[in-house]
Amino acid sequence: MVDYLSLGLSHAVLLLAFWRLMLRDDLDREPPRKPPPAEPGPEPEAPKERLGRA
Amino acid sequence: MLDLAFAAFLGAVLLLGLKRPFLWVLGYIYVDIVSPQAIAWGFLGSIPLSLVFFAAAFGGWLVLDSKEGSRFTFRQVLMVAFFGLCAWTTMNAAFPEAAAAKWSWVWKSLLVGIFLPLTLRTRARVEAAVLIIVLAAGSIMISAGIKTVLSGGGYGTLNSYVRTNTGIYEGSTMSTVAITLIPLIVWLARHGTIFPPDWRTKLFAAGLAFACLLTPIGTQTRTGLLCIAVLFVLALRDMKRRVLLLGVMGVVGMMALPFLPDSYLERMGTIKTHQADTSASTRVAVWMHTLEDVKERPMGGGFDAFLGNELRYKTREVVGSGNNVKIEANDVIDKGRAYHSAYFEVLGEQGWLGLAIWLALQAIGLIQLELVRWRLRKSTHPEDRSDASLANALQIAHVVYLFGSLFVGIAYQPFIFMLIGLEIGLALAIKRRTASAAPPRPLVRKPTLQPVGVAGGA
Image (cartoon, rainbow over the protein chains, first blue to last red):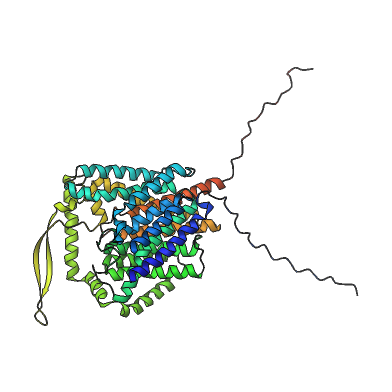
């Protein structure tokens, strides 16, 4: 019983893995390297209040 | 029923391979590890599944697959040399029939190591191969883990799918491979792209890793305990809060002790007792005999050359009980004891040259992975982080296997050659990516001759 359960679970995952791999184009052709994620820039400065003339 | 289920699974893999021939290579890896023809009891046993899948894998690669990115590396040359040496020692073996029987599966292991890197020509294929190896071997460990929880297991009695106690289904081999899988499981859970790291992947990975940790407890092998200790030490290398983790591991270990089966604790306790003396005496005697043997046969005695050994060693036995206990020393003569060590197995069977080649295969891989880790250590690119992490996982897995090899004759198992194949595939994938990302060298302009004024001009 334990053997059937283990085999069933593991082979279901294996079959899913094979299916997903079949759908992957990068399995046969290396895609171009993705650019690194953009680093967050410095926070923009808050606009300075204009001091009006009295 | 089991035959039909396996046949349906294998048939599906063959069909899917019509769209992606590389899947036949993965199918061959699966058949090599799991051996479904040995698990099922019916018609599947009469089909040469290894041959069918190897023909599909090799034929598919040869005829249908692009060779772009395929390289033949120095380590594959070493494996070809090792293949030739093993063939030669088999033809000149001290025990020809036994040697031929062992060679009948060893040559397939070596072929996997030589052929696999040729097919791993993209980064995705390396990950795919890691995943299939983990899932295939993991299917054995899931069963072992569940049975350990339910029954506590037992040395030599934990029944797996295949009852012959050979190859990966042998207790000590299964323990070693189980622990070897854990760093690869962790890597897939954190960096996998085939099953992205969501809660379902992490839950399955946690369960699989736990089953792998339970396997040495179920098989009750001391080698398994050694491999667990090595794994934890190596895992500390890249951890930031090492002291805290050590403390947590110590507390968890102490808390787990009452839940471990009594038979397991008793067997691990023999590491320090006279019962271990018998086991240790036998092994040391075999190893000493092997060293003497290669003085006369420096090229080795061929596979299973241990059949010719005759050992004399002393054992100690406790006699009596209560206040009347004494230890008796006995002289024992034993014949045909196995090597119980991959290192002495290779030395005794393939001689000093064979051992040198086998050790070089291991050492070059570990050094290459360390260089990959060092080269990528400062990169923040996600692909580089993933590759550095995979190099670390493969390195830890390899070292655990080499420690397990100290006391188990697993030098020629397909698993280690698949691991070597993965290492070569990863190194080549990184090399290709580095080469394509390098900026083109600026063209050096040759200085042109400029006309100068005519001397003596008006």
